Image 1 (tube, rainbow, N blue to C red):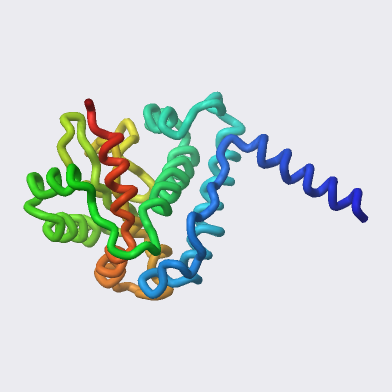
Image 2 (cartoon, helix red, strand yellow):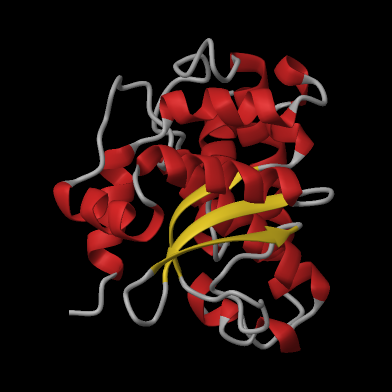
Length: 222
């Protein structure tokens, strides 16, 4: 019995090592973002949807010549790759980023540098939220809304369909993402049903501005 258990553990480790991409642990408990995002949604979202993208991406890459590429390298030529790679690479990257941008910590704030940039571009953080919400509400069907740093260090708001993101070579609005919000129905339907606006209002209570600020600083062209 012991040898069988050891064999199972070794096989699991071997499969993890051989997979090109792996899902990072969620940085908080499923229920940590209550009442804004419920535990059951987080569990399904992370353990089913995100996990599925990772598995399907690794499967899709088995039959291509792009096995050794990073996600960013895949995005730089995504228009020439199969749809299965595009959808699942985007799904993995977008969700992996999204988890880091949520936090149970209360009242995080943008850094002074980020707040200055937000104020200069949008007139203040409340205006930024309103414009991001509007972009999210205007997205027909499933997708994401983004705050990015463009090539000239300007902040730009955009949205993408499905699992696309601003790093992909053929999207209309390119940039380095520093904040994203998932607007697929699976991100909110259990708690908010079809009320996307209510979900958007709630999610601002758990945005990790420390992480957004760090990403902003890293994205700047020095």
